[in-house]
Amino acid sequence: MSPLDESDYDDPRPTRPTRPAWDAATYGTPDDLRRWPGGRDPRREAASGGAPNSGTEARSGTEAPPAWEPPAWEPPVWDPPAWDAPSHSEPSQPSPYSSTPEPDPSPYSYQPSHESSYEPTHEASYSYGGSHEYEPDRYPSDQYPGGLEADEAPAAAPAKSRAGRNLPAAIGVGVGLGALAAGSLFLWRPAFLGVLAVVVGIGIWELVRAIQTSGANPPLIPLIAGGGLMTGLAWWGHADALTFGLIITVLAVLVWRLADGPDGYGRDVTSATLVAVYLPFLAGFAAMLASAPDGDLRVVVTLAGVVLSDTGGYVAGVFFGKHPMAPSVSPKKSWEGLAGSLIATGVGGALLLPFAFDVHWYWGLLFGVLVSAAAVIGDLGESMIKRDLGVKDMSNLLPGHGGFMDRLDSILLAAPTAYALLAIMAPVA
Image 1 (cartoon, rainbow, N blue to C red):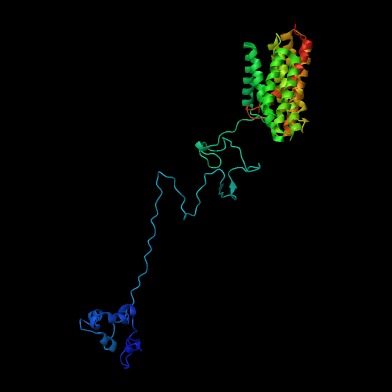
Image 2 (image 1 turned 120 degrees about the vertical axis):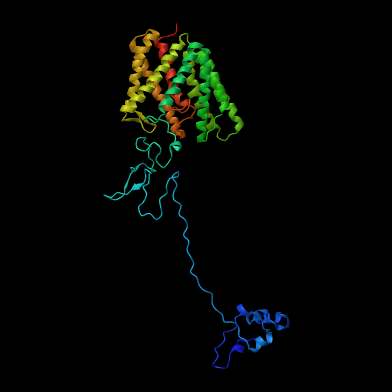
């Protein structure tokens, strides 16, 4: 047994109280007494008033260690955090301890009502996706639906007509193209040939680009070169030269395509022939109209007939269109729109042709009706091509119209029709 065992402090005399067990935290471990020279412990001497005390006395049990007293317990003091009152320069925030909810200024919020249950302050939108068009009179001037501030308001979408067009842009582009054609005709007529060649080249690029989506790959370079050739030959050599230019263009396509190998050769050559006949060959009749001595008037009455047909059909279709004419090809075209096109162009032809070529009004009426019918068929033909290719517009070069091909579609059949009719009604002297 260790000489410093707890039993050394058990007093056999019953009259004395039992000493507490050895407290190592207060008096140290038994090894601590061996560290002091001579076995003296300064802590024990200080506790006994300075009397020498050795380790042997401590081990003999003649002096008891001081009584242990537990430290006094004090309850912790809780210091709550200071609550900052809202300043006047910043908007006040709702208190988390408040029993009354603060009103939500959002137009989509639900406000409490004392008379009934909660009701929305904003009407629900029943469109797919939950979208709602902004109405300026419904919301405050400094806030828009969704919590956007006034300077963060979304830009207004372009105004579209009931027929799906951006009407202001369509009118502006149409007026600009008409001014370009009329200016080149009346100021310096050969400039019209240059304008026509550029428009035909852009139309060929748009049509080839659309056909490529189907897997065919008609060669672009011989088609554009052949289009310019056919336009020039029609200006100087008329119908025979125009036909010769078409043959040269098709032969150039056949030779050019040989360099790409046999895969898809027939498909590519066939689509290229369609492009050559549909666009530059038919547009060559516009060049033949302009090359006549009174070619400026012939081109003007032809373009006027196309514009009147398009405008009359548009107005009648928007306000009266109920019966689709070809829903699988062009769902927006109606029989009422066709009637509007024929009436507008017939009346316009009856007024224009007697003034321009000194013919009877009924010849002008017939001219307008036939040109309008050709323009509508040309429009449906281009719509059929776009449906087959799965494209909406040939391109987006002309705002409100699509591409140049979307404007040339009516003219491509109206030009040869007008050329043949004017050759009969008002032959060149």
